[in-house]
Image 1 (cartoon, rainbow, N blue to C red):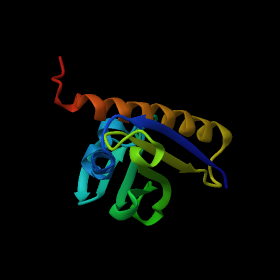
Image 2 (cartoon, rainbow, N blue to C red):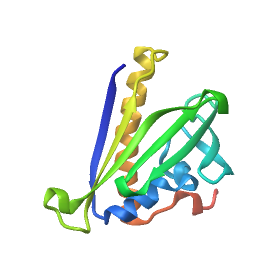
Image 3 (cartoon, one colour):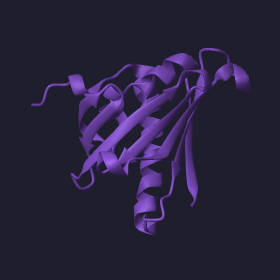
Image 4 (cartoon, rainbow, N blue to C red):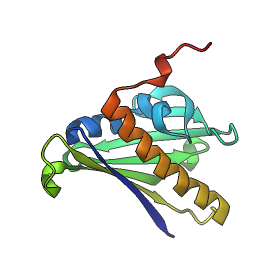
Length: 148
């Protein structure tokens, strides 16, 4: 099994970044793998994979003290595994002050992923982290925009 890490420094306090990342209702703001979500239970969403429209489930499991979030992912509730993790680090810990933080997203490669799928996943996560940074820093929410 291999892994990939995407990261960004965000101009926002770590607790606020953590709250954003731990909010399952915000997954469709930034996650390309979880589009058009429906909240099933607190912390559990069903959505569609943007690349092929297949059903995808995500359970968001926040661990507040560590500022760590487990994202369990699967095509049905029985197949969910913890493949994505996010960690938020206060800027104080790396000399940037308390109004700054670092977001790390870690993806684990499952044995069922071929090279093309893994490459797409790692490229997508890099884009998602940059998108998250922008969304948090600007407060923009594309879901509020009317469709013309």
